[in-house]
Image (cartoon, rainbow, N blue to C red; front, side):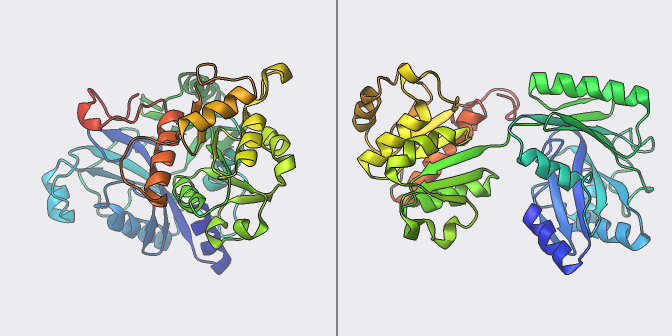
Amino acid sequence: MQHVLGRARSKGTPAVLATLVWRKGSTYRRAGARAMIVGDDVTGLLSGGCLEADIAEHAKTMQARGDTAAYVSYDLASEAADSLLGIGHGCQGALGIVLEALAPAGSAEDAMALLSAHAESSEPGAVAHLPHPDTAGGAGESVQSTPMAPMTVRRLWRVGGREHVQGTLTASERTMLAARLDQCIRDRKTTEKDGIVTEYLPRPVSLLVVGAGADALPVVDFATGLGFRVTVMDHRAAALAHPRLASAVREQVKIADLAAAAAKARARAVVVMTHNLRADQAALEGVLGRPEAGPAEAREYVGVLGPRARTEKMLASIGLTFAARPEVRAPAGLDLGGDGADAIALAIVSEIHARLHGRDGRSLTTKEGPIHEP
């Protein structure tokens, strides 16, 4: 959404951020979901696509009235929802959404700036959404045909270890919300209590891809589509120049320097896929470190393309084993079937996503209880 906002601001086009701050029952997204609205265009989903056009209309109405923020609610189980929107009673839940106008010039304290600051950090964060008194009860009269009374956005953020206030908070409110942020970060989960949503902002996902061959291109595509911060290292300038790698940070590194460069890279996940044994060996040594050199930076996932036996030999050459380093996955990827670069990339990025979210990649059909819980 940041790039959408950047384009809108470069053209002087107003933009509105929509945030799901309250929900009850079955809904497509959880509290904290966001969408960017620029005119009729909506980037991001707050529902399965059934509400976005109506939300965009609310945003236009809010802007036309000159309001900086407004609240709209939907009861998707009501008859009114089906008759007004024709959504067919999809999720059978209720949700409340805050709309906030984003200043054309931007501000260091607006929601998108704070989300951007979090994306650049290397630690988890949280934000507590304090409801407006008029909206604390959640959903209003079924489906609102216009935004509710103008509201003031009031939030307490913790980003990069620092607190930031949106709106005005009393001293007691700030103390109470700070305690909730502490608990949220400790528990690593979003909570909804007393009308207040405390949203967990997980550590941004940083991915190092070692190798810029043709099969790395879909890995970068899928990863950036999920919001990963991607760095690609390769010794070949021509490979790094491919336009599909434009969304990633590109670093040309000689094979002789690859171990040192990989060791310094700040990445939660790494994929080694150079197809060059010497380069793969150097990357693994840098990422994992040799036992005699002391612990390297902790990685949550290290995937290696190619047969398991090949990686086993490379690990042995630096005094390591699969048993000693469970974060190493070789061959990289989940067993999804299929063949070709896109299928392999899908399997790899799916495994990374599951690993970093503490999941095992199984079918939701066999899962008992809420699907969003580990």
